[in-house]
Image 1 (tube, rainbow, N blue to C red):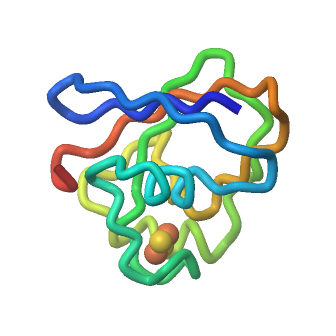
Image 2 (tube, rainbow, N blue to C red; image 1 turned 135 degrees about the horizontal axis):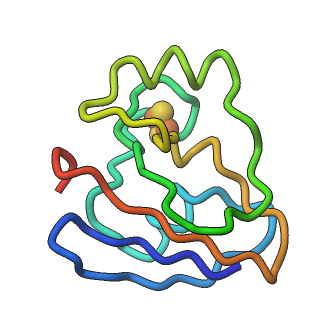
Length: 105
Ligand code: FES
């Protein structure tokens, strides 16, 4: 899948991610700044917060109760906020664009 990460200043990072990878893991593996993932991907830190801006959106897992609870702690939360450690890429053909909150740059 092709994931485009857009920093708050507009800098783009385009990454190829295998199906089964999370948007957080792909960012860490490719040195994308702004996604700290302090908890290592177990949905307990909210430092992997991103905004999903793709239109149309690819097939993404729905928000779980745990994700919604942790998003309460995310600075600058919006309707399209997600925790990137919860976003598993499903297909090679998926294209996803996320922006990184200003507070994480
Ligand atoms: Fe900690 Fe996603 S990496 S909540």
